[in-house]
Amino acid sequence: MSRKINKRHIPGILLLTLVVVLLFSCGIILFWSQNNQHSVTKVTVESGATLMQIANTLFDKNIITNKQTFQLAVRLMGKERKIPIGTFNLVNAESNYDIINQIIYGAPEIKKVRILEGWNINQIAGHISKEMDLDSTKIIELCNDSTFVRSNGVNGSSLEGYLFPDTYFFYVGDKPSSILRHLIKMNESFWTKNHFLVS
Image (cartoon, rainbow, N blue to C red; front, top):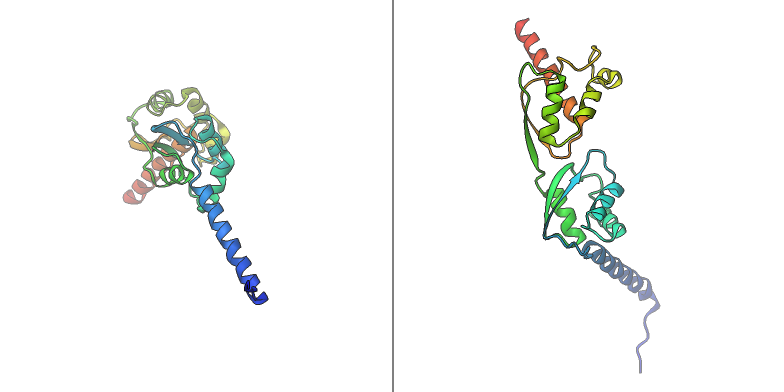
């Protein structure tokens, strides 16, 4: 004779079945093979990029073939707001889990940029452009953009004289605006510090 299932056990069995199905589905999503054909490849996460934009970048570089499962995997891992900016080397990253882990915990590439004392805006823009592979025209435009200049607490009409000469380390993928803001902050910090020393 077949044994009857106690009706009181049905909710527990259904819950257990649901949990198993959910865990199985999560495992499929996390370890979904994206058919990445590159043994080693670079990916750049730009400042302000959304999860969808990051997925599109990976898709365009043939690192992932399914954008939906990648985005779901990022959310399942709770990393949606923890993806750092920078350029990362992905090594044998085929599954969603591997790709996400290497971006989150990998060391981004860094560029050394030395700004010399006495350089004008054009010289600074040209050097940053060369070292960071950026458009010098856009950097010069920002330096002379009154809205950008004022938004950084500078009273002048341009950033001439407000970009502190020093040796800097920037992440590959940093935008011109964030680079210039850092130079302005260093200039402000230097003069504030020296003002207190003198007074």
